[in-house]
Image (cartoon, rainbow, N blue to C red):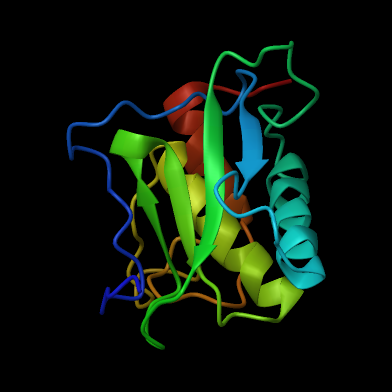
Length: 156
């Protein structure tokens, strides 16, 4: 069992990891260790990639084979207050297996992919953002897109 009590422990910029460029091909592997992912888990992960594509991210477009970099998405048992975490040392996003709503899964996976791209948490009182800790409903916003483009430039 994955016993994490925070809603999201994804690394924020400055934690010493190298963020991935949202315009450079990046393969997504869903749970290599346990291929028995559910339909909502697959649908939520696919929807998360579409949310970022809708904000101009091209990293998930068909990548060359083999892809230069891969992020693994894994669903694991966890405390109820835990939604997801990005582990940069293992290039892995862990998501609470108890999340069953594909829309909530999409938001959690998209949030953790925001950490992959170097985005940090945004306090809810600062503004509504995909990167609000514990977020299960807000997709990437225009401000999230502007923050990503300020860091990396536009993928277009």
